[in-house]
Length: 75
Ligand SMILES: [Zn+2]
Image 1 (tube, rainbow, N blue to C red):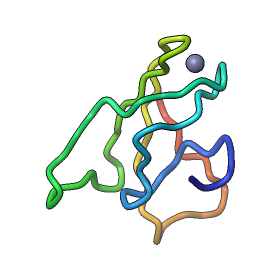
Image 2 (image 1 turned 180 degrees about the vertical axis):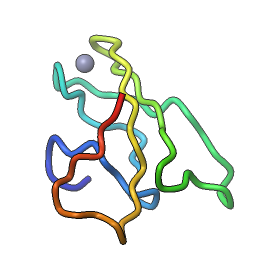
Image 3 (image 1 turned 180 degrees about the horizontal axis):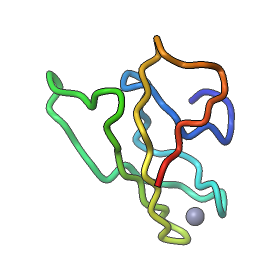
Image 4 (image 1 turned 135 degrees about the horizontal axis):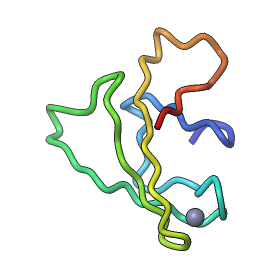
């Protein structure tokens, strides 16, 4: 996982569990995909926190198109 508080991830870096932004708990990846059909940049993957049950929609970014802002979170 890169850094902290960065919700934009590229497909090869998608984690099964991320840190909850609200409570610091563990957010579990709620979607799966075929090994030969991973999420594309712009797709949204869903995590849910096991502690506060918040849902997090994470936008998959294209690692070639990052501008350094790290702001890939959209609701
Ligand atoms: Zn939480």
